[in-house]
Image 1 (cartoon, helix red, strand yellow):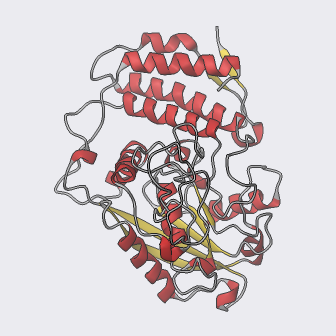
Image 2 (cartoon, one colour):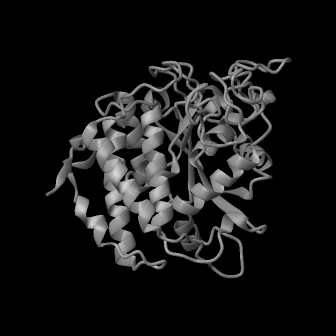
Image 3 (tube, rainbow, N blue to C red):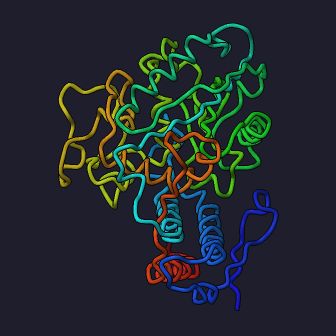
Length: 379
């Protein structure tokens, strides 16, 4: 018997089918065959995509018009983490993980697409000096993580509609959505490990407060063209959008691109951003308070107002935690590593595969849980 999972036809052009009995045919060997791992991942991906699209309209815990558009709902976070754990367990086994090694050193190629409505800075025609300074800020902010960034290409794209109207919405009927898809389909370069940055205006969008948004690593599997970061052009170093004009918007959005949630994800309840060393706080920070706030007094620690994944002013932001660094490395290895080897984006003497054993007990439990959640409608 098959359970048919309905998917938005505008996005997938059809239905995905999940066969509950298929997982039982997986061999619980420490080194599954490529076919077994592929079959397992296909099942998980089907469920994950179905869940994400089904819950796309669930409101997040943040305000209706956030400064950052990367605001998944709690349901979407649970689905993404289910997919993440499943993908880790479905990989083939070796003895070492790259995350545990001292020589973790990943160079990420950056392709910058400056969308303009004219030849002035106010029209998005930011000088090359501000683009290169943005990469310098990015490298400084990520200096403790093992990730570095190299500008591979840059271009100026005159398109007044994209400059004005590209925004963030999940409604495929919205012009903001249509223009964003159109822009990325025309311009995106590279594979999963390539960072595409689109600087634009957000001048005529639903959310006039929007500074930027990004895709998460898990989204690349089912929508690779959408992968990347979109920022307001005036947030680059020396830009006009004070107090968010020191380049920290790009740092923040690249944090999402590498798998981090906001430090205030979920507010004072639940598992928050799924990183143990970032204290919970109720919502994004405004400004840069002189006295550390404690908006979740029943949880340990003060609000992490200096964390790059908060909403504080640019001058206030200066840190990623060790837990966030581990998560970014895990997410990169899980979703972007294979492409990075192919693109020679990783330093080292020879390519090595850093994967994990397939734990069939956990795998079956994950699949059973996913199926039950879907069928009961209680994700």
